[in-house]
Length: 144
Image (tube, rainbow, N blue to C red):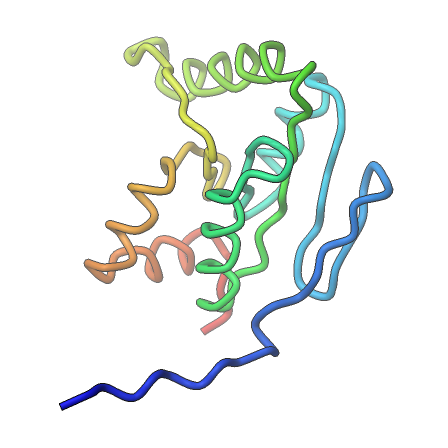
């Protein structure tokens, strides 16, 4: 017996603009800035996805969070800025962990409530087990 496909919901798929340093689509904020303001951006947003510009895995994480009702900020890294941004993110992670962890990072990096939640694998695992929605609620990313 064949399964029927789920209907396509276009309301869950906004198209992001790419031309400015800070832009908004109808459901996401896109930020391209220096490493100096990265710590502030991570602290000031309930959910932020940090990834390389055009990364398909960042897009997957964004779509999942949007379909759950969250409005993630997207911080896109240009290739020439990658090393500086990675160093700054690793410093942020070490500061939060009081130096107890080595602060290794993978992209896309998802910060929830100002702390590193993980990459795509952690987001997917938390979603499958049902742990993601309570974490997003606690961070103030969902109003359910």
